[in-house]
Image (cartoon, rainbow, N blue to C red; front, side, top):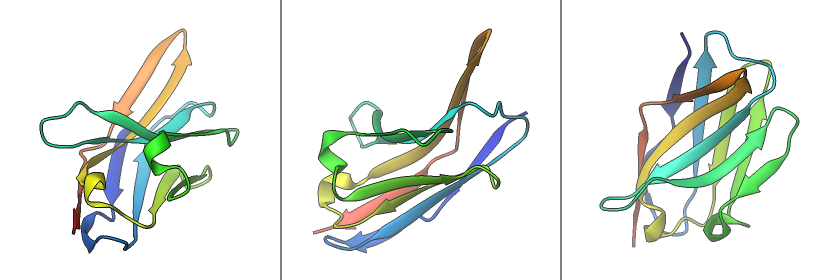
Length: 118
């Protein structure tokens, strides 16, 4: 069974920084995509950033230049460095790992709250 455990959320003032971490455990196919999604109150969950096992990156436009996603394949851990945070970044952030091997495998963490005060 795959488990994802996030850490690093919290309360920060606008302009500040936070670093989220997500450690995966269990059997994970070596070719996969790890990523961060977020859900603000009253809104749908949206993609923030993803990184493939080969290092390809993808960001939502609103975080480009401010957030950086990275991963440590040996530790099965993905990180999200968030700089110049804005109040609109306030949301619950979820870690995800996905791969396809005959079928789709999709796992989520429990979420970590990020609150940015103005």
